[in-house]
Every structure is written in C-alpha cells, then in structure tokens.
Length: 154
Ligand SMILES: CC(C)(COP(=O)(O)OP(=O)(O)OC[C@H]1O[C@@H](n2cnc3c(N)ncnc32)[C@H](O)[C@@H]1OP(=O)(O)O)[C@@H](O)C(=O)NCCC(=O)NCCS
Image 1 (spheres, rainbow, N blue to C red):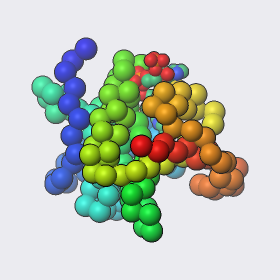
Image 2: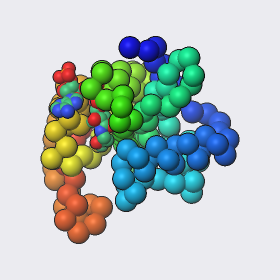
Image 3: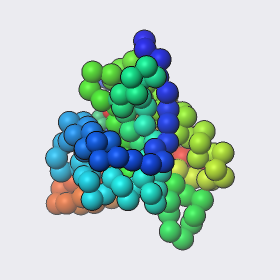
C-alpha cells in the first residue's frame, strides 16, 4: 500500500475546492455532495480532515466535522468517505482512528454521526471504533431518508 497521510485542511485554493467538489459527487452522489458554497465554510468554521497519498498529495478520503452549538464538547461527523478504488484497504480505519485521536486531543468528549442503516460497511466501521446506535431520525434528509444516529463517548 502507498504511504498515506492524514491532514487537516487549513487553507485552500480554487483548484482544491473544485477537486473536493468532484470527489463529493463521485463518492456520495449529487444529493449528498457539498459544493463550493459549503466546502470553504466547513474548512473555515468546522474541521475538514483528508487522507492523501504522501507522494502526490492526491486526496483519497475526507472527513468533515461540525461542533455542536450548545454542547461544545460534541463533534458531529457530517460526512465521511474513502474514494472508490481505495476502499477495503484499511484507509477508512486509518482516517477514522486519526480523526478520533485529533478530536480527543482537542478535548471533545463525544462524537456523533448519522448513517443509513443499510450501509453495512460504514456501520461496521463505526461500531468497530465503539460508536453505538442511539435512535433513528426519520425523514432526516427528505421523505423516506432515515438516518441512524450513532454516538461515541470518549
Ligand atoms: C464506509 C467506507 C468509508 C469504509 O472505508 P474503507 O476504507 O473501505 O474501510 P476499511 O478498508 O478501513 O475497512 C474498515 C471496516 O469497515 C468494514 N467494511 C469495509 N468494507 C466493507 C464491506 N464492503 N462490507 C462490510 N464491511 C466492510 C469492515 O468492518 C472493515 O474492517 P475489517 O476489514 O477489519 O473487518 C467506504 O466504504 C466509503 O467511503 N463508502 C462510501 C461513502 C460512505 O458510505 N460513507 C459513509 C457515510 S455515513
């Protein structure tokens, strides 16, 4: 496996945003993908962590995080993906492990995310790190789009 590094994006160029916009559509589909109106907002006001090839800096995975407004020790993983072609090689595990380490170091106490219960690969990955299903949020992202809330307490 090529060497992978996990990096928090701190500043950005137009080409970086265009690249992420493309990866979002390819890996999440056009309904779930965020675009040039949201990507910079998460970079500036949330946290945008990527997995990239060390040699070329090619981005091969992303984890986008928000902070809960009232309970500021709660982080919400808004989006998480590994680019197709790089899946099932342990990169999702590495990105999630390093992300959780970063959040723990920054004194977060709880991490939440939502997932489609049918997304077995994602559910298994989250369970492996100790996330537990807490509730089902009906119609969360539109009619019939139900999401399972999963929570990890540090
Ligand atoms: C879910 C996803 C992030 C997993 O990333 P990945 O790099 O392929 O995962 P890894 O190779 O690190 O495997 C991690 C664990 O996930 C589970 N997993 C991965 N692929 C799986 C599959 N096809 N079926 C079942 N479980 C799977 C396994 O438990 C695996 O651990 P193990 O092999 O030690 O048992 C990736 O499949 C993906 O990006 N999917 C599309 C976007 C998406 O659904 N994101 C989640 C939105 S909430």
